[in-house]
Image (tube, rainbow, N blue to C red; front, side, top):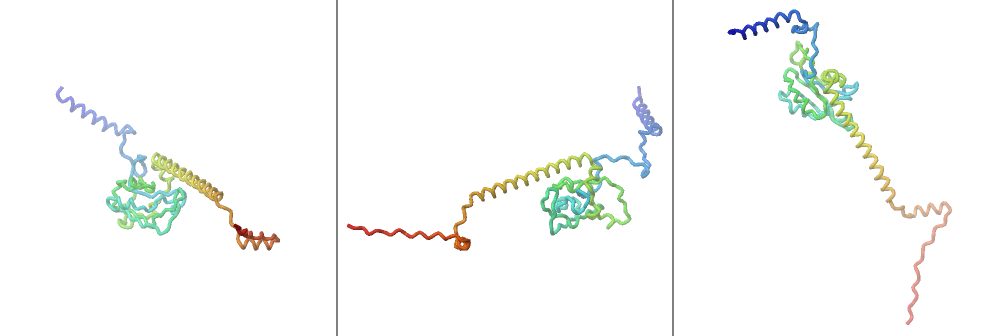
Length: 231
């Protein structure tokens, strides 16, 4: 029938148009901010720094390797390395960022900084309500503003956080096992060295000590006299 496809298309359009007013699950308009939709787990906005525990300074995972700063396409990351070190999650002394700034006004949310970080120290946030009247200082985030706990990371990216925690736990267990094996090997080496050490030779000081204790010193052996040979 001529025009049957056009009629089917108009019917489908009308059904969706009027159905959106009566079927709640098809309503596309959300009365924001009173109503909010759950964001997908893969949602990403701007980077943030991860820390373990309750102290953002002591638990910060970043070791100031500056890989993210070098790989950032818009060059919106600025890092200054510390002069001293602090122990990381396996107890190894590491540097930490004395300064870590991100200019979110130029950040393109590409996630390259997350992909190149070898320490799981930087992740993508899903917070998008970041408007401010100050377009310069208000959009320059410092280390204090960027640092967020691992609990927050588990909340917004539970699947990714679980994989990361499992991998870090395995690394920590391997580091502990390696340290324990090294301690056992060092103890065995020290014990073997003690067993192979020869006894100390007698010294004049030891002889004087024996004489003071009442022990008679051992007389020195005289060389044997040679008898003359008669022919």
